[in-house]
Every structure is written in C-alpha cells, then in structure tokens.
Image (tube, rainbow, N blue to C red; front, top):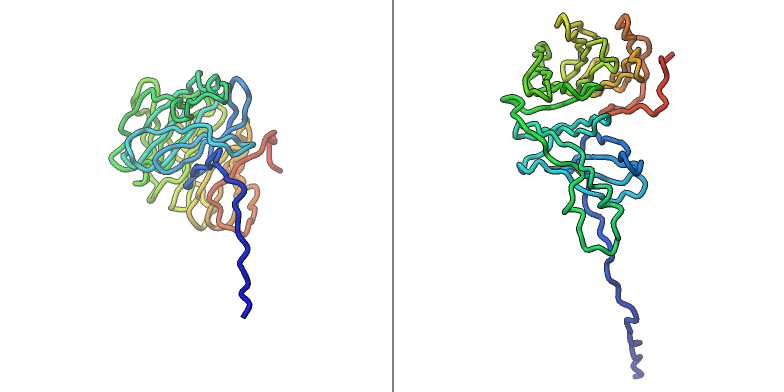
Length: 277
C-alpha cells in the first residue's frame, strides 16, 4: 500500500499587532463638537464608568474622562461655548470638567512618542457636588453655561447656579423619571422644558415659576430639542413612535411626524431652519 506523505507546512510570516481597538461605547446619547484649536470633529460617549473621546472621522479613541468614583454614568451634558462637561453617576454626584488646553498639543505630538493617551485627559475635574438623594436621569446647560438643569428619577427638576453652587429653582409635578430637560436657546425667554415617563412635557417659567403642561404623547417622552437659536419650535420624541413639533409661542402642536420606531434620541443637523413648516 502506497502511503501519501502530507505536505510540509511552513510558516513564512509572523504578525505583530500594531494597534488595538478598545471598547468606546456602552449606551446613551453622544455629544458632538469640534476641538477649539484644530477644528477636529470629535464626539463624547458614555463607556460605563468613563467617557470616551473619539475622532468622528477615524473612530480612533483619543482619550477618556472619568469621575473616578467607579460608578456607572447616568447622565451627561456639554456646553460648547465654554467647553464645560458635566457628568453624573449612580453615586448621585455631579462632576464638572473643564477642557484641558494642553490636550490638542498632546494629540499633535510626535507619534513615535511612548506617551499613552491615558496620560493626558481631554478634560480636567474642576468641581463636584451632591445633586440629590436620588440619582440624576438627565441634565442640560443653558446657552451661557451659568445654569445647569437636572432631571431626577423621582420626578423633580432642579436648576443649579454652577459658579456659586446653589439651587435656584425646584420644579415638581412629573410622576416618574425625568428623561429630558432643555433650556430655551434664547436666554431672555427664561424658559426650561422637561419631560419624562409620565407622557407629558412641562414648560417652566423661570421668572414666575409657573408650569404649563403639554399633552400629546401616549408613551414616555425621551428627548427634547429646540430647533435653532430662535427656539420657535420644540421637537419632542417618544416611545410612541412619533416626533411632535410644538409651536413655542402658543405651545400648540404644529406637526406630528410618524417614524414607525420607538425613538430614544434625536439630533438636528445644521444649518437650523428658523421654523419648521
């Protein structure tokens, strides 16, 4: 019987990993912006106990931001005007970060350098404080960055004076988790809107402290966005598979857009229209 000899296998090449794609995202809305000096487009997103700063074009992880309390991140917001980042975790603390101006110099370093991205954080912690006895579920800066609105899991909405560290307003009325808060983009309007699991939107007057209730959704409201700097239209999304466009002068429904999917988040692409017809 003739035996067939197996061909000899020769490994002619070996490979060495030159880069590694790490985990960058575990849920929640991302924040898109440009770095102030080199205009690089980036986004921040939640990655468990830390935030990832990612290059929008390449997907490269540029750096991380961590409060350091080893708790999962519940809510984030960012003010591009003064490059301030606010993070809240399950510890019920709010952490305020300012942009690290040395970070872009680090990004433009000689790539042969052995310095790791973990050595230079894009944001540095400036202050922290306890927000409430219960966890924060949503946050938003006003356009000036002076005030921070905080939605809580027990239905309460607070407004903080960030610089001076005290609460300027307390709004009650939501019967469930507050999923979204947003200031009117025109500071002279002195308005704050909030929405949550109770299907309704609250329009809070920051001067009189009166609250107007808007009804239109038939399931939890997930997001609120004012359309453009004039703020003449307010968009609300929900798990009822619709986006509602509200007239912010009369606060009546202008349009109901059916999207045939439960909406957990949305964004407007610039340039913004003055109104949505």
